[in-house]
Length: 257
Length: 296
Image 1 (cartoon, rainbow over the protein chains, first blue to last red):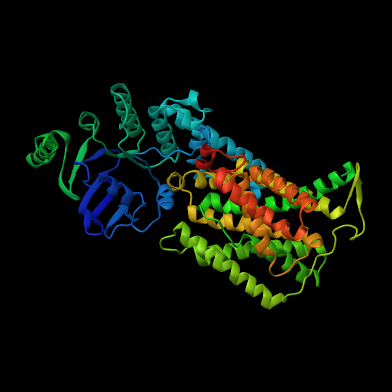
Image 2 (cartoon, rainbow over the protein chains, first blue to last red):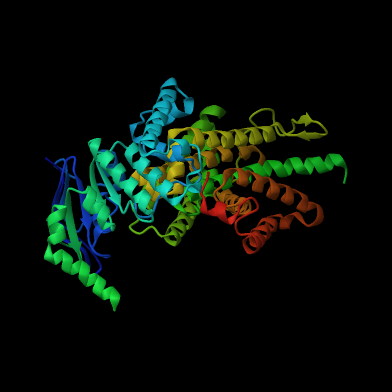
């Protein structure tokens, strides 16, 4: 069953077609990767799906519901959460407070209730904290819960952001270069973590430059080049696809000169 | 100068300082969620007191203050929804020009509704001549009301921003709007809420000071300048720093009449504003790091 369906999606910035008539589906429970040279439109695609950008045309169906005109916060509440290539944490908050922000969508107490300190508010507060703690435990950094989020190392901050995205209990998780800036050991751990996320029943769509990671964990790959989809297949077939090899080698050629 | 007189000056300075601080906190709340200075902030103070005075003609004091504050709060929401929310590209400069325009509009509307007359709410307890003796100084009971109500509002706001879900959502929105949207927070609603909160505390402050300072259609401009000075003096965006900055400005103003004509009193705040902007733009209690980190 396809949980997400992107059809004929296009987005231009001025004269530049960042995403040009792209279509693909995302099978529930899969790990799918989007790869392509720099400027291929991968991040734009993520911004379109997560509602940070509006497409010019085309459609985005989440569980057969059209979400192309929804704002980012609404899409997050529907069950599509994401991380950014550049980490976006809340400064001035501890790790657990950061992750708790991801759980507020489950809160029910209104303005008056929260000011009056009703028992229900206390219970909700506890549930929020427990849920956030559970997410931290899942990514393996529960001992950092009460540290200031911005004091942590880069790799740890990535895990906090991931825990926050998981705290929303999403059905689809969009990961934008989760291994960027990580060392080899951290990258391997990130790969295992992504597989464990999938094993929990969360569908993963991932943009990543680390090819060995992508080939290892993803079940299907979409290749973008200059905003267009040029291939979509299983990793082994993508590795043998001549056009894919040409754009990647071509890119290396260009870098050589 | 005797000790008594000295303390009397201090008391007067603190009273005015706290009012300036409330206006400054109104600036801060909106600044933190939007990055703009709402120059119509003083007009919320004016509207709160003028509406309360009109309502007091037909109902007792307390309900008229409560109702006036709620009405002003919704005017704040209306302003945001009508003039800010639908902006296609909300640049800071554009929004600042809009708020200046709004402040002129509100002032002119107030002039046509209430005229130029100076009005006032009655003293909450006692009257103009009653006074309370505290230690060596005698102060009007209304001063205690001003200080009490304003400090209470500061405390409630701190509690709200730190211990309630909604407050935390607003903090998240100030700290990183993109991450806030990622967590499913409707940042536009948080901006509306910030206008409502600013209007509400401005209106309450307008009501409690009205018996001492009197109210007039143009009282907002002066307060906005003082409040802005205090917000900058303390360090933009931080409420407790605004309280400190307010008291500093209030006391300086109060002592200024001692060595220069009282007509120049208002020049003090402008002078301080310029000095701070030149010498220490992050404010007395701020630092560069703090400026990057928006806290209520």
